[in-house]
Image 1 (spheres, helix red, strand yellow):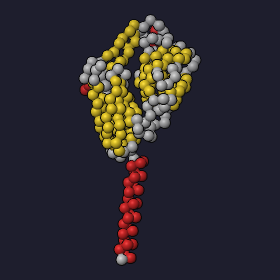
Image 2 (tube, rainbow, N blue to C red):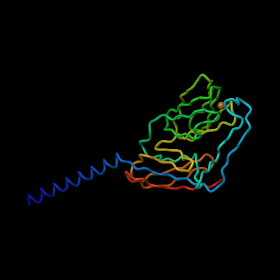
Image 3 (cartoon, protein in one colour):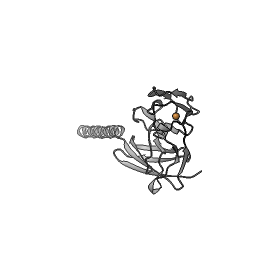
Image 4 (cartoon, helix red, strand yellow):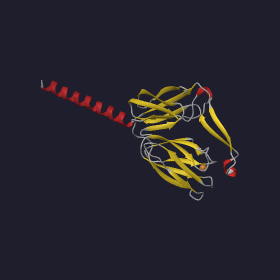
Length: 229
Ligand SMILES: [Cu+2]
């Protein structure tokens, strides 16, 4: 009887240890979510003649509203797992280069963003947002970097009051986020295992969401098809 009890206690202990180990592996080891975004419609790119600061801006501005790559992949869409902690703490950076915002869409954690001016001319960043205060600030050519705060989750439109064609977006997203490449693919790394909501946002094609089951140490694929408006 006593022996049976001892064995019973020992096996409960072993089972508990195994559960504890499994739980800590899950907590540390997230998975990757590979998000593919497709769009079955036409690209939309505006081209404008430029006659200001042409030595830096060139003579033609290209405004990329909808960029569709090979295989109908949609570039410049933001994919995110808003509930996933553990996103990169690296500070987001957007540059004004060639009188364009580079990259066209940047993702950041709520907090600070670095705004660069590598053009050696005057720019004036002007943001449009509702949750965050609007930023409207001149950035003379000698001011190579400014740091600004965007603390509330939101998709913030950025423009320049000096160069009317300049257009960019800052996606302030809690959780893990990335922008789709020219093939419409974004990889979300280190997403905790389990059910996660995945959101996709595009500046003119709107928002969609799906739920995926993320497995530790594995890549889970999910695809979206954006609809034209
Ligand atoms: Cu400008």
